[in-house]
Image (cartoon, rainbow, N blue to C red; front, side, top):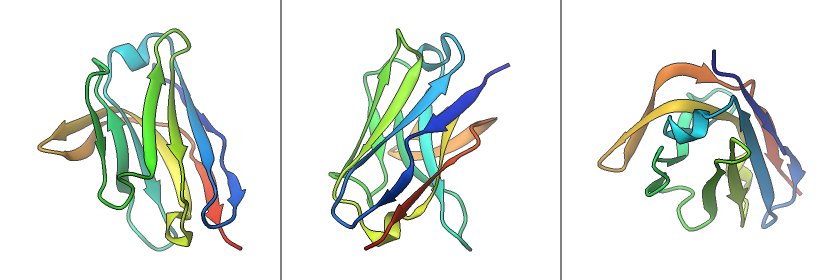
Length: 124
């Protein structure tokens, strides 16, 4: 059983920064490629960022590339998402996923391991 718990969301002004954290079950982040996805009201869930289980590759959607950074801490079994230069269009519920599959810079979830999500609202 894999458990994922996100934290760190909240309200932030445009141009601001937020760090999201995903606490995973023991050894999850060293075995699974981990991803962050988001879902805005009325829209489908979309890929944001991923880090390969080896830790050697990271992937980003075009909309967040250069602004967001994904990282992991194997010792703590956490995956973080540093979000800078936030825009109102980044407003969404952000979900952590274990088992993200990435190929040719296209990533999708392949296993049904999700956290409960954390809300990020970017507004002045």
